[in-house]
Image 1: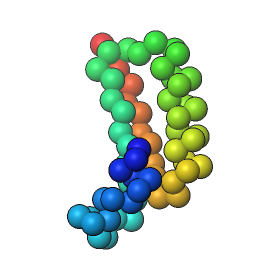
Image 2 (image 1 turned 135 degrees about the horizontal axis):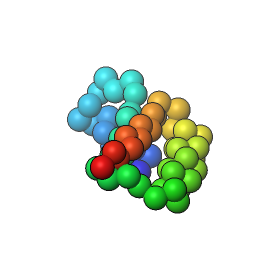
Image 3 (image 1 turned 180 degrees about the vertical axis):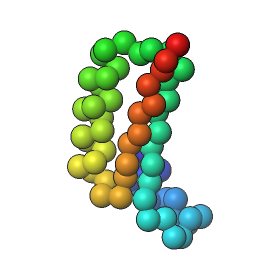
Image 4 (image 1 turned 90 degrees about the horizontal axis):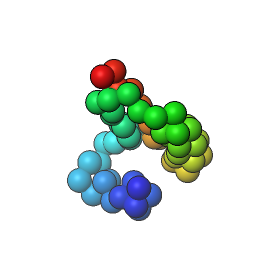
Length: 60
């Protein structure tokens, strides 16, 4: 998060329009993970205007 917040990525990637945080689970995650990720998503979206958080839920 510091890397994004400090905008350090702009030194290497000058034309970034959107940042994607992807969280992937291989196995079915506990319900508490859903709650944590939903809250984290709200915080990230409020803090960074060009950020999208994608959660891929496990199926095994």
